[in-house]
Amino acid sequence: MDVLTGQKQVLRADILQDLGRSISPEVDIGQIEGAFVMAMGLWLTEELVYDAETGQLLTDRTWYCRPPGPKDIPIYFRLELRRNSPNPVGVVSSKAMGEPPICMNASIYLALKNAFLAARVEAGAGDEWFALNTPVTVEKPYLASLTSSDQFSY
Image (cartoon, rainbow, N blue to C red; front, side, top):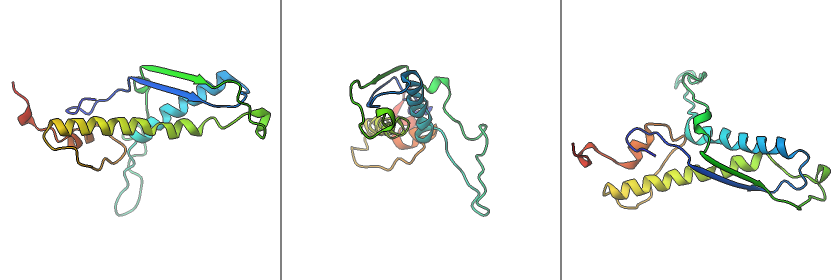
């Protein structure tokens, strides 16, 4: 994460998911990866802005609201399906597949918050709790890290 520009890249994501007896592992892997990357938009890029008077959604196109793209996918994305764990009450012994990766994606927000905390400590602000609202768009890292131009020399 670059606290000056707000640019961030997820270097690695490891997922171990229990699907029970997978009906189609190839489809399930694609769904899990897609859900994880989709949730990255929730935490990192897709900010919803509404008009204060009318309530109209102002960020209604990708020009304003940025869904995750190919460069947002973690560089090293390791996914493994747990074997031999059938679900006796599930359809064909399967388990949930799409929702768990969305919940697991909170790890990206927590990793960013720890990075901001380290930047704040380095800036002399201490390690006190601070609010970090989502999505963590490009301007929020600079504001949350308390970095100032006085800390740099030319």
